[in-house]
Image (cartoon, each protein chain N blue to C red):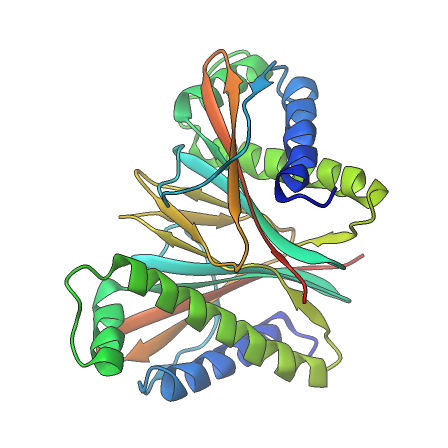
Length: 158
Length: 158
């Protein structure tokens, strides 16, 4: 659990679990790579800060609209016309649950985290630029309605 | 220091101080009000999560582009043509320094905070929707080149 890429794995694992149990959606995940551009790769992004005993971090999960419509349809049987508020709540909840799951997995590896308050960003072509001394890693999560991108930026404490 | 509006004051105070010392820009501040819409009121927003002994929070500072051009001009003597990266760094730095300043002020009032990693959001008409059980308060900060909006959302621990 010391390499940078090892730190993103619990988030990816927890996200797959949340997607499967809460949104009834199966996924496969790609390998984490270093993020080069600031372009958010989805239309709606959930973002949350974490502070810990050994590092601090920021998690962003970026969803294409098609995936969110698919999840809403699976959950509610139909895709609401005016779904902006529900979509925002859904993305906030998925972000929160994923972080909670990863927090438990990381605690087993000796990393204790406190979670801040999630925020949901939406808007065409929004950019997210994490400001940390450490690396920003991104992992694609493939679903049948599109790719979700899970991004983790972190900074080791001195 | 128990009312909700009292919690945003140290952030506003620290921001005014940072703006004056780092960006050489004077400001006056309005009264905090409850945020009703999710529309970000600026073009570039710095956001940071905080976790604490008594509450957790998220701070967003939303800048209109004109104010950022003004600050860049004050700092560097000219407004760079291709300033996206510098603007993003500047907003990240202003967000970080403001939070650091507020953290010190709040510590005197018995609130201990850890700061997560700041992220900078840009994009036309981006929306930011804080997901907390508590209130989101917004305070306008008036400068001669436009209004900056400082937004604080928080959740008291059970």
